Amino acid sequence: MPRATNGPTRNKARKRILRDARGYYGARSKHRKLAKQQVIRSGVYAYRDRRQLKRDMRGLWITRITAACRMRGTRYSLFMNGLKLAGVLLNRKMLSQIAIEEPKAFDELVKIATEASKAEPAKA
Image 1 (cartoon, helix red, strand yellow):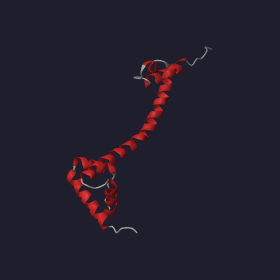
Image 2 (cartoon, one colour; image 1 turned 90 degrees about the vertical axis):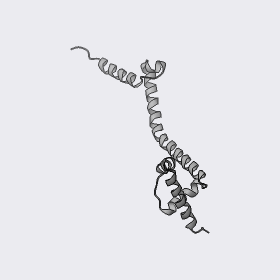
Image 3 (cartoon, helix red, strand yellow; image 1 turned 90 degrees about the horizontal axis):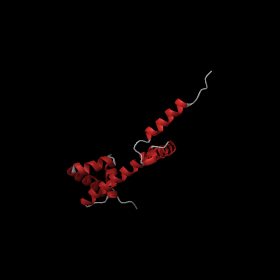
Image 4 (cartoon, helix red, strand yellow; image 1 turned 30 degrees about the horizontal axis):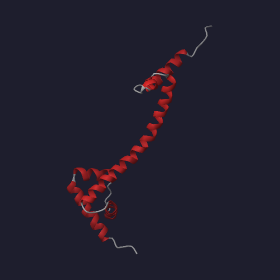
C-alpha cells in the first residue's frame, strides 16, 4: 500500500493563504508564514473596524448637524432636546442628510425644536 501524504491538503492551504494575501507588500504576499500572520492581523483589523465605522459615522452626522444648527443660531443639544420634546423621531443620519440636501426643511425642524423647548416649563 502506498504511503499517504498531506501534499494536496497542504498545497490547498498554502494557496488559500497566498490568495488571501494578494496585494500585500513584499514578503507578506509571497512567503507562507508572513502571509498567514498578515492575513490573521488583517482579519482582526477588519473585525474591529466594522464596529469602529459605526462610531465614526455617528460622530460625522453629529458634526454636520452641529454646523447646521450653528448657522441657524441654535446649539446641537438644544435642537436635539427640542425635537425630542416635540415628538419628532428622526435619527442623526436623516437629520444630517436633511441639513445638507433640504436646508428649508431643516429650518422648519429648527423652528419646531425651538418652539417645543420654549413651551416646556423650566425644571426647578
